Length: 338
Image 1 (cartoon, helix red, strand yellow):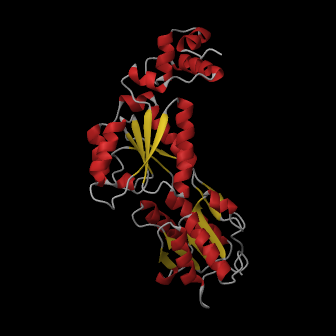
Image 2: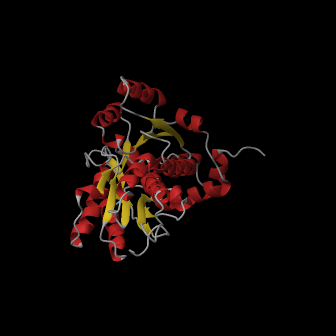
């Protein structure tokens, strides 16, 4: 079959090729009802413009960057899925970049890479979304940025977030309602502002219930399985152990689950375990983990939308913040206190 062209779409929609081009490129000056009608024809025909031709005929770039410090994490995998699906639907391409500050010249290397790619926008994830030198770099090169769950500089860029304090508090309240009074908490990587917010929500729920949290019940982790396993061993060995453990993410909660198995502690009969994020491992574990469902895919989708919509292109200094709702998934790893 002959490949579809812009003219084919225009003919079917009853508009000019220029109007179709404006709709596909997300440009302004198209009435909302006309834009919707043209987009419907584009979707029906399955038309996908040539990305390289689009860039040659436009001052815009159709390449977006997704930046992580650890792109192999379960958290990163969900964000990549959401961003990639949305980019494909909109005719954009996505490149995933890893940035770490543990080697000399990292910022210079990042700048060289950024200049060579000619990005149309970038999504920055924790913790690098709060690195001032990185934010200054993107501003200097004039690349629009949307940050996922930033903690610092709230008015500096557009952002997508959820209420992590409220989510952690609500899940802690569930554990308290199950009769748990002695609850351990495993903190996340202190470089991530999410770690402090989740601890804040946990403590707020405990204080509101009149429950004391001794220092020995809040252990430091770093969002990895290994740190959750180590913290779980400390909390669960010996006669004085909590009846429940809330880990600041699912990977650490899985570590606690393995520690419980090693020590012959039945979950949830003798110990309840809760996590945060609703990563795939939370559903695959046995018993499945109770957790906060952070809408990673929807957050990535919203970030792409903020970068690609006409209003975002017209103003590269957008400070719009979208807060998405969370839900709780109560599964087999939590139960009444023994």
